[in-house]
Length: 402
Image 1 (cartoon, rainbow, N blue to C red):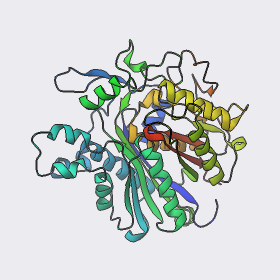
Image 2: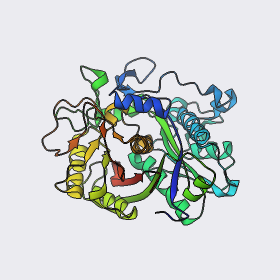
Image 3: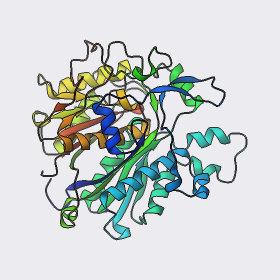
């Protein structure tokens, strides 16, 4: 899309265990430097599993002490990442009513919820709200246009980015701060996912606990963080001489309508989602240079996605990366974080390797990038998110010159 409502990515911001900036995150990915470590999910140390926490997180430069008391950790992470994205974009250069915010989160203020059970204070309810991140970002940056929150489990961040693009295309906003955030590292969350068999609870090497598509994988590794992008009308970005990281060209979303937690075994919803995103971008599977996989490291999800990729791309083995091997799985954060990673893949012309792959599951017939980053030519790149609830979302990104 090259018309007046084509969409540019002009700002990036992240806060996660693998990096406090996009550059630190990229360095972790290309060096296969895992963020996973043994983490105590409770103060007593009775629940200890591999996880990807945000180390030494200090929001003091972004929030006052009073504001920190009013905001859940997830929201604090979101505001920091969003502020960095806005700074990277050089500000929001449109009137406040032409600005918008779209946030995605899977678990909202779950830390505040658990800590306040039995003794809630006057700020307990506002800290729980899934839309609290959207409020704080809107308030901080004077956004009086749309301010929305999407909660579609692990697809939340990708849906937020895609819906933000649609806002710009529809003419309801010119600049949107869009992304995802979650901080679910609580004992209850860990125990729930562990008992469901979805999360790694024990392993010999915690740093290598997250192993998407590996024959010996045991599940995902829980992570926290936030990732935000500033999306802008391409013509406005060019007119002000903005640095454009990439263009956002396509978006697809579907529902499996199959099972609460298991994807369709043949990945039919994922197939339809990728095909819709490519059609929306005005391109085909033959043109795609790289796939950023959802790749959680759970058997059902990995197999369904691998089959879906094989269906969409046929005999052509497009290079695939599964970044959760480094970043862990941030739930509502994941899709937005991987949108940032995909932007950087486009910008750098590289597909980062998938860490910790010792033996590819023979049922996953993928060209998985391993060892070293792989050069990729200019062209469309697709990022996938396939979530509990059967929620599927895919975005297509391309070079600034499209």
